[in-house]
Amino acid sequence: MIVAGEPSGDAHAAALVKALREKKSDLEFFGATGPLMRAAGVETVVNSDDLAIMGIVEVGLVLPRFIRAFRKLREAAVRRSPDAVVLVDWPEFNLRLASALHRRGLKVVYYISPQLWAWRPGRVSKIKENIDLLLSILPFEVDWYKAHGVEHVEFVGHPLSGEVKARFGREEFCRRNGLDPARPIVSFLPGSRQKELERILPPMLEAIEALRTMRPEVQAVVVVAPSRTLEETYALMSRYQFEGVKLVQQQTREALGASDAAAVASGTATLEAALLETPMVVVYRESPVNWHTLGRLITVQHYGLVNLVAGKEIAKELMQDQLTGANLTQELLKLLDPQTNNAMRAQLRTVARALGEPGASQRAAELILRSITPSTNYTNQSV
Image 1 (cartoon, one colour):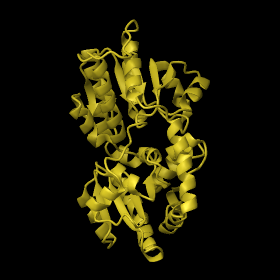
Image 2 (cartoon, rainbow, N blue to C red):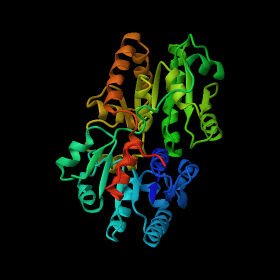
Image 3 (cartoon, helix red, strand yellow):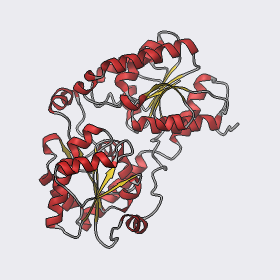
Image 4 (cartoon, one colour):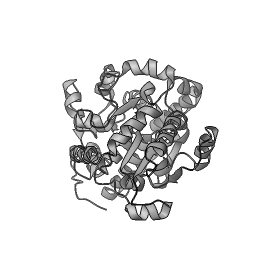
């Protein structure tokens, strides 16, 4: 059984399923699936597409939907008794599911360990009680968990390491999108959720307008996440009476790779930008209720994953009220300075090395299979 509830988790889970099947072809999978897991052949018990929601208010409005999903997954696990339950990220839901299934005697593996070091660290007791194997994708997490009494934790590396590559280069990206490769390009990634688009895109549009005035040679590209549509993005832009910006979709890595600088919503995309060595500003804006309620629980100095891995702020973070068009413009102009740009690219190479060698999904698959049948070596096995 495999359970993921957000777009990034869906992608990592799908890669893990592929790696598991390469090592043992007769495995069957069921659980909570997104489009990539379904494409990988995972049987759907719960469709997780509509469950990728953040925030107290947002979750409260659809709480019955989460309760129904929880019960369906619990009942399916108890009825079918899988050899292992693999929970992928999504801690608010999955930690509760882990508790319900572990006390029923099921083996529970947690892939992409919850970021308890960032907020609500007291939940580590749930990891110790209910997780048989914890698989970490960030280099500093193992030490943190072991310092908090969790011994069954392994670092497998980040699934994106070695996998983030542009399908084509800057010249081809510009040719396909009507851009001039000789002029600077700045990409804007407002996030994958509807509320992120609504809150983060407007200050990005303000920055684009300012850049047009201050640096008219700069070309702005808004990168629309696969989970959003071009139509809703255009509709939001028209609401702000904004036209003439190049929108691209299904070209996230190509846009980042072609860009001289980028503004990126905090999340996995910041690591993609780091692996492509694209200088960036990390941005985010929540609703006031969520920010003032949940923000108080955050215990780390930095928000962006790229800075957390680096252990210092190498990419400027503009969070909540700091995210204004004026502030974002100022930071992007700094990144367009060649000396500053080259310095950040060098730091991003260090971050990329810290994420581990390629093959995280394969290492995770091997550890999961060993936990099921400890006597078998799956390192190079392909059936």
